[in-house]
Length: 120
Image (cartoon, rainbow, N blue to C red; front, side):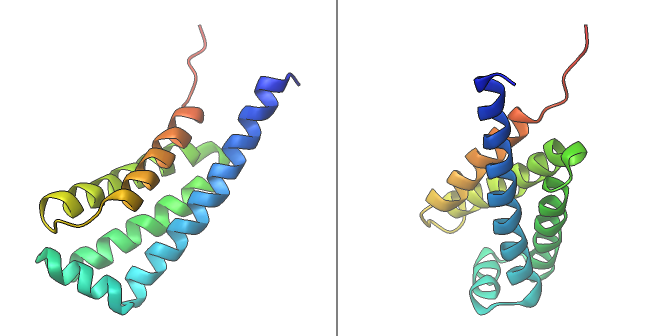
């Protein structure tokens, strides 16, 4: 295995573990109704159903990230949910979007690295 390929595989595994564990924790917190998540979604004003929906999407995306064949799709799902959170932080809540933007970038990177390749 050449060095670039080995480095790519290590990067993919690190991102899979990091994002998978992070989003299992984030999704679990939303589904469990941790006080900060309840306040955050109350501030959005769309109701707590949205907290449950995003919590479920976070957990599903995290689980997909751990399955090699589905990693790209899980990362894309996480990219969409956390990207939306970054936009909501900026537009609706006037909060610092640094963490959601960093997670969005990491999810996009993982999706790119694990995208299906076309065989010519």
